[in-house]
Amino acid sequence: MNLQQIVDDTWNTLADQRGCGTLATYIPALAEVDPNKFAIALATPDGAVHCAGDADEPFSIQSISKVFVLAQALERQGPALWDAVGREPSGDPFNSIVQLEREKGIPRNPFINSGAIVTTDRFIDDRGPEDAVTDLLQRLRRMARDDAVTIDERVARSESDAGARNRSLAFFIADFGRLLNPVEEVLSVYFRQCAFAMSCRQLAETSLFLASDGTDPVSGQVMCDPIRARRINALMLLCGHYDNSGQFAFEVGFPGKSGVGGGILASIPGKAAIAVWSPGLNRSGTSMLGAMALGRIARQTGWSVFSGESMRH
Ligand code: GLU
Picture (cartoon, helix red, strand yellow):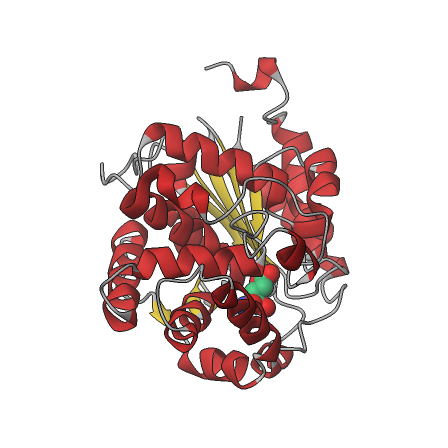
């Protein structure tokens, strides 16, 4: 199978739909991004990366960061993390507060905002916010094999300035006594993790551990235990696109995580990690063109976590 050709064909076939969808204007800095950007990077465990379009241009990874923070929070807390956050799809928008009251401050899953605020809190643990951010930055640089991975402080400030909803979620959880750290410290990490600027190439390389039982197959670096990688993939499939997760599983069939910067990360266990970027979003915050690109790659490769044939080695 010629993966470079599939990536190129996918980019060329969809390129005239660049600009579709709506930018995430609720974070003012994201409203300034060029809506015509479009990138694909597909990394395989042998170290190859097949790219098309703006694949070396950094963009705001936003909620894709929730995957990396979950992996690290699990490594720090072990199964106790699941006392603080659930593992069920929410069926509600990413920033919804409605379930939190009924479910006593325990968010449905680690990928909605309320759940990610809790995993960020547990990732910080007892070391303070600055050490936690430094740890994440160093880890992502190592995984991407690229010290250019950085935090876009302007995006982080922009989100913090417009962050009333996330503050509401965090204070609501804190009121149930379910945060270990002060709300503003947790949010200072959350806003910065969302503001990581990475290219599709860097993201695909960083995420190969998800397709490779928790270990980066190129460097041998362990990101998490094999069973945890499997479970993170399960959660990505069920919850990675908020109230659009069923549709994404139906159309694409890969575990994936969206970000309102227009990136989507997908993992195909045993096969590849794919990052796509196109800033225009659908109503659930998933990149419109990005989801189309992943659907096309799924059809062209025959890959799907639901197909026994295509998953055979
Ligand atoms: N930083 C975003 C927020 O909290 C993340 C949402 C997303 O990327 O889906 O609103």
